[in-house]
Amino acid sequence: MERSRRALVGILCVGLFVLAAEPAAAQTSVNDQLIGDLNNALLYAAIPITLLVQAILIYAVFKFRNNDDPKPTQENRRLEITWTVATAIVLLFVGLASYQVMADPFITAQGNDVPDEADVEIEVVAFNYGWNFNYQDEGIQTTGEATIPTNTEVYFNVTADEEQNSYIHGFHVPDLGLKQDANPGQHNMVKTEVYEEGEYQGYCSKYCGVGHSNMYFTINAVSEDEYQQWVQEQQASAEGEGGGEEQAAEEEQAAEGEQQEGGGDQQAEGEQGQEGGEQAGGNGEQAGGEGEAGGNGTQEGDGGGGA
Image 1 (cartoon, rainbow, N blue to C red):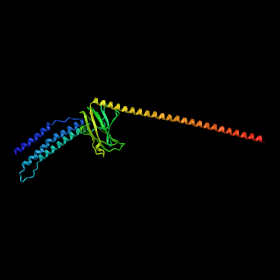
Image 2: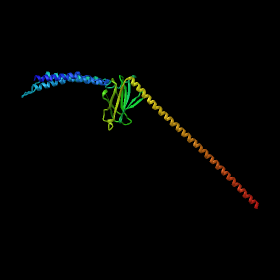
Image 3: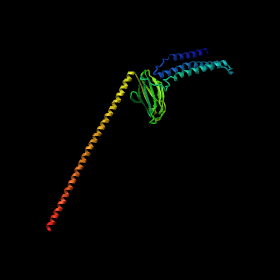
Image 4: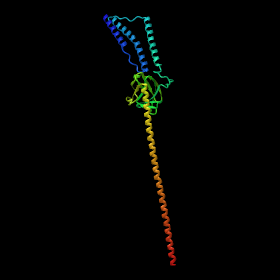
């Protein structure tokens, strides 16, 4: 009996030591940190309760294992009040801890929360089946991949393509602690601040149809200098594509103008040829009329000579 108790106490102590000695994982973002801290707080509150319940259970099993005539427990108001108050305290602690996290603007974005000039705002548009990221202030659009700076507040304005009659999607980046619904015609805000550089995988958290498995995207977190360099490269690329399109349009307009000029010259030549033909025809008719007049005069002259 004594050995069993010692073994049980030893196992519990080892378990507590493992939990206490486990190194804390690096927090990737402020959202991940808030959620992780809440989970740890609830875990530390649940451990002593679990140990207490298990200890009472094991004690009761060993103490009354040979009781052939068990009796029902007698009424004990002091014990009932104690566990009722203890339960209320535990629930109050869980409620307050959860409320502090849920009320944080990084977890539940407020409607009046407006980005500052130093912040980054990205419109996330879900469609069937993919993701577009619109940097409206920078004039950049990417598909399936977004680049954000670290140690800077980033606002994701999440929606779904209304013109395409898109399904309901879910914007979810587990490693950053981000999750928000993407509904057609509705914008839902979620913001974060990433601490660690790297690539973070995101996907659609709702089963949206046959192409659901293709709705992956990547969030690239880089330093501020790398982010500014990336923005400049994207803007230069967009300007180059725009300049090429304008040049192609100008060349096409010039070619159309040359074709129109060529057609006008041909039409003018045709009209001149037609006028020349009409003049030639008129001269021919005039010559024929003079010939007929001369013939008639000859006939009259012959008639006069016969008379």
